Structures are given as structure tokens and as C-alpha cells.
Length: 266
Ligand code: ENP
Image (cartoon, rainbow, N blue to C red; front, side, top):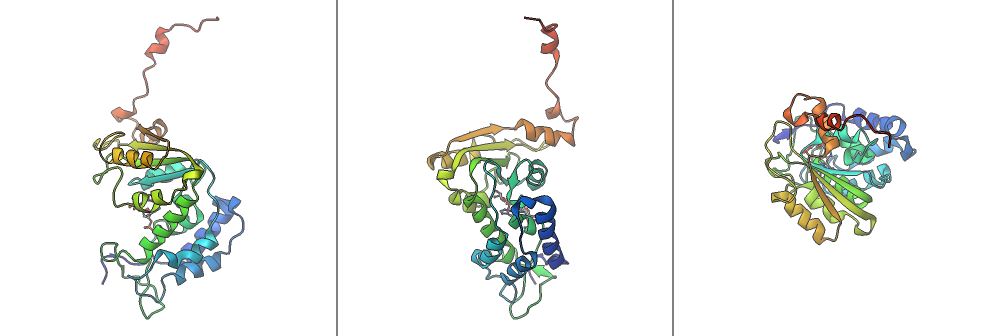
């Protein structure tokens, strides 16, 4: 009856399995967590309730049970480039995006919703955010985003897609609406914005123009030290890995080095 995809099959096993995978293998530094209690808290946020009446605070216990600190300088916010961010962050080894925290890791790529007056999950369909914004998945990410932003510190990275149709900095959007307002000014030293175009995509947005300018102005007005860079080199190398012959992937010419001649001894 809803327009969105139904609950992911085997949700319980996936959530509990992801939880153990995270605390034992992906990031044991977070310490001991009770994965069955975490599943109960997750489920109780939306089970037996009207699927259009789930609020971020319904996930409060889930967040308390999964919470761990986010290492300073490792936060990576993003919009419209989830797969790129997944490989760039490298499950927390390079950066720790929300999807690399235990609370984000558990929900990533999943769908879920319950039904009023029934303890069962709805595997047929779930409400989209257009149908009702207070749905189980949307409220989960709102709560997770708020928590993630509140606990981010040091140097903050923001990776935006300069080819995105709705603008690199979409409004409304999670970053605009739930993350920026929850950053803790006193804990943040610097914000780097990286705008990267798709290799084949149009160059719609860049530092200093359109939606990115709006973002830069907003953050500066809030008092942050903001630096924006187009086509960050490390991210470009990652994109070019799958597309080495793209013209944007030509390595810098070695001619100048050759012209300099042999290395002198002085
Ligand atoms: P999209 O629409 O590009 O990608 C949505 C996909 O990313 C879904 O598979 C979703 O899991 C997963 N996901 C991972 N982290 C988030 C998230 N954090 N979030 C919503 N979905 C997330 O993503 P958005 O809507 O632009 O959100 C990007 C935001 O995530 C940025 O603000 C970034 O800073 C933040 P699922 O369970 O829906 O299948 C917050 C909202 O980390």
C-alpha cells in the first residue's frame, strides 16, 4: 500500500550480524556492546506503531546503546555520493562517515517499517518521505545525523558532488537541516569542503558559486574557518582507478622534470 520498498528480508539477522561484525572486526576500539539488546531497542522504535508516526527520539535508546566517540579530524559529511564516500572513508580507516559508526553501519542500505496494531514487519512496502516524513527510516537517519554532528570535532570534511542535479549542497538535506545546526562550534577547528564532479558528469556546481557559495557563506556566518577546494586530488585518484583513460585522469606531464636535467649535486 505504500510507495517505498518493504522491509529488507532477514532484517533481524542483518542487524545483529552487522553489530557483531562491527564490534569484533570492523572497529573493536568501540568496546563491548550488547547486540541483542541493540536489536530490541532498534525494533521497539517502530514496531506495533503507525509507520507514519515514528520520531527521531524513538531511537534514543538505540543510540545510547550503540554510541561511541568519533575520532577528532575523521568526520566526513557528504551528499549525493554514497558509494564514493564508502570507498574513500574505507570503513573508518581513512575517515569515519556516519555509515562507518556503529549506529550508521547498522542501518546502511536497509529498509524497514512496522504496522499499527501488529507486531509484524511490513515486507511488502514502506512509506517514502514524500508520503510521510515521520517514517521509521527517515527518523532513524535524522537521529543518527544529529548524534554524529554533535560528536564531530577537530577538522571536518564535507564531500559534495558538483554534478548533482539538485545542487552540490541540497536544501532540504540532511547536512543542511540536521548536521550543520548540530555541529558544536567550540570543538571544531576547521571545515574543508571538497566539491568533486562525476568523471563523465556535468560541472554544475563549484566552490564560490551557486549552492556551494550558499554553504560557504552559511558556515562563515556561523563563525567557522572554511576552505573549499574543487576536485580534491585524492578523491580524483580514487575515481580514476575505475576510469584511467578519462581525460580528467591524465597524470601531470613529466616533461618539466626531464627538462630540468640530471639532479645536481649542490
Ligand atoms: P543518499 O540519498 O545519497 O543515499 C542514501 C543511502 O545512504 C541509503 O542507502 C541510506 O541507507 C544510506 N545512508 C548512509 N548514511 C546516511 C545518512 N546519514 N542519511 C541518509 N541515508 C544514509 O543520501 P542523503 O539522503 O543525501 O544523505 C546523505 C547524508 O548522510 C549527508 O548529510 C551526510 O553528511 C550524512 P538506507 O537505510 O536509507 O537504505 C544521514 C542521513 O552522513
